[in-house]
Each structure stands twice: as C-alpha cells, then as structure tokens.
Length: 424
Image (cartoon, rainbow, N blue to C red):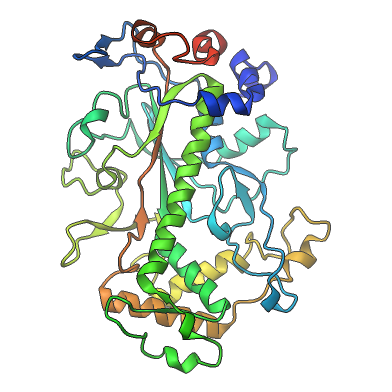
C-alpha cells in the first residue's frame, strides 16, 4: 500500500482536495452497486457489470474516516465548583472523526467485506506522532490496528427478519464494505453515574417509585432533591451513543462523495442478527454473548469475549469491577489524565495531573447505584441495551448505468463518474 502514497492514484488526490460543501450538498443514498438488480417496477434494471471490491487504499481511507483517531482531545477547561481542578469527565485521550458526549468514547467499529469480518479498535488509540498532513502515516496507523475475526463476508440473509424488505436487493452486497459501529451503553451509563456523583447528585428508581437503599448515607455530598430518574439517565446514555454512532457514519457518508463511491448510511439490517442472536447456526453474526431475560422478548447482549466487552458481568466480576475499570480508563496509562502522556498543551503533565480525582467514596456511591439496578432488574442498564448497534455505513462501487437510465443529469457527482478511471 506504500506505493499508493508515494505515487498516489488520482482518486486519492481528488479525495484529499474535495470541497466539503460539495460533499454536503452532493450527499445522497446511492444504493445501486455494480452487480445489483431491481427485477421489477418503474426503476427495474439489472447491472451489466460484475460486483467489484473497493480499492484497498480507498477502503482504508473510508474506514479511518469513520472510526479514525484525529489527534489529541482537548480536556474540559473549567467548572466553577471544582476549585481549580479540571473536570474529570473525559475518558479517552484522543479525539476521533466524530463527537462523543463528554469525551466518553464508548463505541468501537466492526466491518465486513468479501474477504472477512474485522474489528478496528480506536477509542483508546494514542494519536500517531506524525504530522496531521501525513495521510500515509495516519491511514497506516489505523490499518495496523485491524483484527481479523473471520474469513468471508458476514452472513446476513437478504430476507426478513434479518433485513428490511426494501434493503434485500442492496444491503451487504458482494463487493461492498459494510461498517457496523457498536457502543458499550453499560459503560456510558456508569460514566454518567460518575458524572452525577462528581456533581453532587445521583439517580432514583422511578420505575418502582423509591430512592436507592443506602444512598441516604451520602447526604453529606449528594443533593437527591435534584436526582435524575433512572430511566431518564439511561435514555440520555442511549441518545448519546446514538449520536456518536450516527455522526461516525455521517463522516463516512461525506467521504463516499469525495471518493466517488456509492453507498449510504441506514438502519435496515436487524441488529440482533448482526450481533449474534439469529437463532440459526448458519447465521452466527458477530458472535456476541447474550441472555434471554424473563419478561423481555429481546436478547440482552453483553459483549464479544476478548474483543468488545461491555462494562457489566460476566465480562467484569461485578459492578464494582466495572466501575473501577471505567475509572481506570480515565486515570490509567494512556488515559486522558495520565501525566506521562503527550498532548496538545505546552505543559501536558501539569494539565493532565490537574484533573479532579475520583475518590473511593465516589466509586462506592456509583457502585451502590449500579448494583441496585443490576440486582433489582436482573440486568444493567435496566431499560436500554448494554450493547447497542443501530446504524450502518455501506460503501460500494456505483453502477452509473442505472442512474443514466432512470435519472436526469446530476444523479451522481463527477467523482462517481470518474471513479474507475481515478482508482483503476
């Protein structure tokens, strides 16, 4: 791949200089890939071209755009109640190509193509020391992190209930790359609980209409008159990660325009099939562990052992261990408050070490609330998934013949028209 950067294809040069405003205004869901077929209806068309995989360089540029580390994150600068200490909300030292609420960064990325199923972990990635303009070093740093999980394309049957009917002809098509962002909502809820405790409050059980037993012991630091309803806090967590996953895919959708690739971001694939609860041994999905809980018809996923494990048992011994692991992400080696880490500041060690510590009592309170939820509801979180997948980004080589047949001028961009010439 090195030669692609020393003697770059025209498509790479085009992508690197493509105007942002043209990407925004030119973004469309272009679903018709090479090799596709719509057998009937007013837009009937069968491709005259064979499916064709993405160029390896453009695939890595796309995936790095969706999931990529983009340098050092900037820490929260001030909170009037923190008495000169920095707020300790942030959980990752690196920024990524999309926003994350309070810098929690609880999502990671899986993808599949004709060659296999892959995992690209970037949430705790230390930024590459190369200059920001060194595209080669940036892409190669991400490529080196990819873990292959299985050979061959992930089997997602093109039929209900695995896939919405309107996507059965186009989703996860041969030649395409399908990106699947997954969030650890359990960790996100823990981080929000830590946030509340650091700011002097907590949650109460609005489902059963009661305070959490034992929380009264901490009246010296918690004002429970302004406590959050448990269900609201969990809704906040789910909303936060939904934005995180959606904006990551949107970054990829903009890059599709610059690369001249077809594709779109969408939700029309069954996440339970993808994660691993299809019930069919021939359709194992990603293989995530899950439980079927009394009173809940939906699988409760907790993680893919050794790859992506949510902050909840059995991947952690108990909720205290899960809380401590979340704190360790912040203050441990490579975390945003590791004084030995580099960063964007002139005095990085002084700034990173100035964060307010999360004291033992704060961990006790957070554990108390988390234990209560798990023991009362038999799951954590109580009302939202511990692991969440909803939005996908697909990229494929566009069959412009379909658009020339059925659309007027302007159905695709110049980058699409010139894609094969630019990328070979």
